Image (tube, rainbow, N blue to C red; front, top):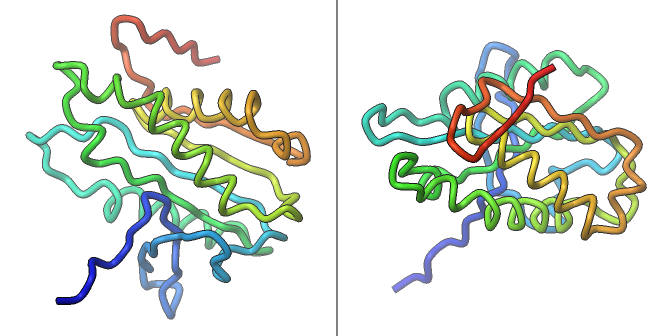
Length: 173
């Protein structure tokens, strides 16, 4: 038997062969040559993944957003996605909100592994719904625990459709 193929929750956008092709996601591992340390990086994080919708957020709106970011920033950009589909299930029973802190720590660690010591590009974290909470906690985790984050010239958070949940307070300004 063949061993299972390793996968990563951190994905990198791989453009299609022509501008009209959507492209695809590939697993991003440390020292991946597709990641360009001289480019800025956008990280897209989806929100709650309700089983009643059953949509594939990663290959739906997230892939289309990655394509548009890639087309818009002509000087080059790393577009990444954090895939936490299974962990984002269960909003009502509290499983998804309970997974935010561990997922944020894992995302911060994955970014630390992806960024080489000479990475100096800007970082843009984009979170939708419950992913907004995840990117906030990720940014705080990075600021508190990763000394190299001070070398990044700019970090931006974009919150899309933040969740209205008891105990989660996000103010959009």
